[in-house]
Amino acid sequence: MIDVEAIEARIGRPLQNQQQGYTVQNGIAVLPIFGVIAKRMNLLMEISGGTSTQLAQRDFQAAVSDPEVREIVLLIDSPGGEVSGIEQFANAISAARGVKPVTALIDGFGTSAAYWLASAASRVYVADQTTVVGSIGVVAQHMDSSSAMQKKA
Image 1 (cartoon, one colour):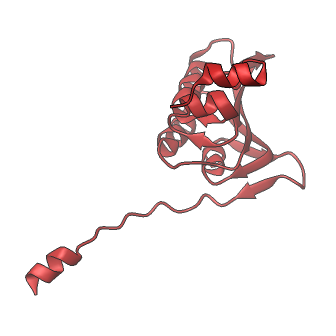
Image 2: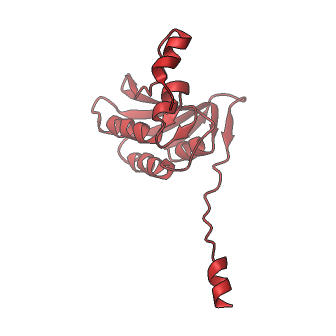
């Protein structure tokens, strides 16, 4: 088990990698999608940063419902992560496009699961020529039926 307080004592400062939610600037909600993406980042996020799809989707829905927000920007710098939770979050982003414009701005990395989220937005922008974008990846399922085949033979 990881002792967060012991780590903080050892490095002499608190770990400050909490997911930040979104900020609103001139009616535009900016939701950061940074680092490795996983459904439940919790402790990992505290130690090394990253994005929890559960928390990011919660914050995204709050921005959609926020009357102060007229547009949402997903600020993405992520190599991606696990597939669990990505489809649900991408579906929520896609559904929100009919309510408010959703823009993805990729600055640094927008690959794999991060690119899947960006592709659900109304518009996707790439910050510069050094930004890496692409490769949604593969979701596959395999059913091992060798045992059933052996019994049948």
